[in-house]
Image 1: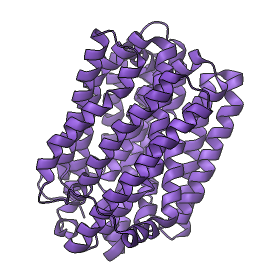
Image 2 (image 1 turned 120 degrees about the horizontal axis):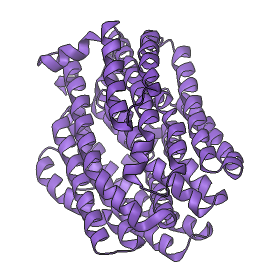
Image 3 (image 1 turned 180 degrees about the horizontal axis):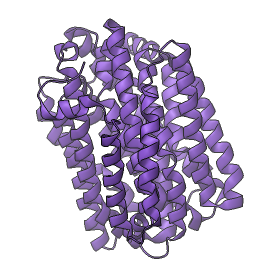
Image 4 (image 1 turned 90 degrees about the vertical axis):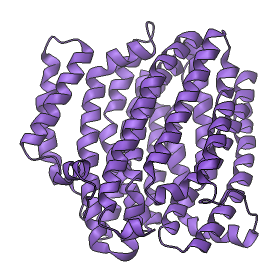
Length: 479
């Protein structure tokens, strides 16, 4: 993995982040129309059920991952060819067994929670679709370590386009809830078929079932496995907790806002994950380079997170109208509250990858446990009082707790290069752009104008790291 030690790695990371974000944004743009049709087609109650089932299966599959993907990326970045091959084949075998068990656990939870028969069967079908996606994601791990973000972005965009096509077909066919939950099965099978020729000869395709190696993998994950599992539950905890104490209609309002929020919340993961192989390698061989990289990652997290929060607050009425249509006006306030979680979410994701690189898994576990507890307790307490907005407030509180606790753990480890010196400049730019809310502009032009003002002011007052422009204009970049 010589690319990780080269001076070009930083440029690859920045360009890769941009490429993955553009690819993701393109996929989101494709899905806006189909998503709007699906919400209107299923209406509030059935769409609320759809979000609940997808959240449940996402929790289960995040839990069954037990942190192996990120640990594999870290180990591959610092190991030889034979070690990588053995690690990947056994990881695939282990993930297949654990994921199959996860489908049964998800179905059992759906039955115990009192979900109707359609939701129970839908949980199994959605789980099978995620099972297939898990196999393809395992094949993609070495491609990410090699910084082949074009390949990964193309596969992600293909999956999104195929799912959009499936949704359109189901809407026009007048399908009920169950076919929508099963749609990921053919979509992910097609993506897997396309991906296999691209990785053949580069990535081992067959699983291995060496129990000793499995034990070694689980020891590698160790405490991080529990931390990753709790972290995955945390992302969807408010939706599941809301389903237990809230009404079906409120679940629909939360679901419409959550659909938009979860799309936005994936952006920090896309941006920061491109830097992870470099951070993991630097943590192993070059502490100064790690400090430099972390500082830049945190700066970008603050800049992009603040802009996305601002744009979401200003554009929430337009976004809900486009995605959900009439009858979902209560979702606007929910989304505006969720938008406030984007800044701490960006910081938390950046800090989480720093903790993984430094193997500070215990701190990750404690923070995730406290964040999950905060989210669940507040959701259960606030939803009966202020309905779906209570779940949104719980999400904001949970993200703030995560960001603070992650930061404390890094500080105690002596990693102080958070790159938060850009905060005052970002605050000035955000306030000036936010004042445009007082102007009599329609929602979409308001967001566009505020974005231009935000980045324009930030550039003028020196808030944009120079490496970004350098990396985009040249083939070499980074530290």
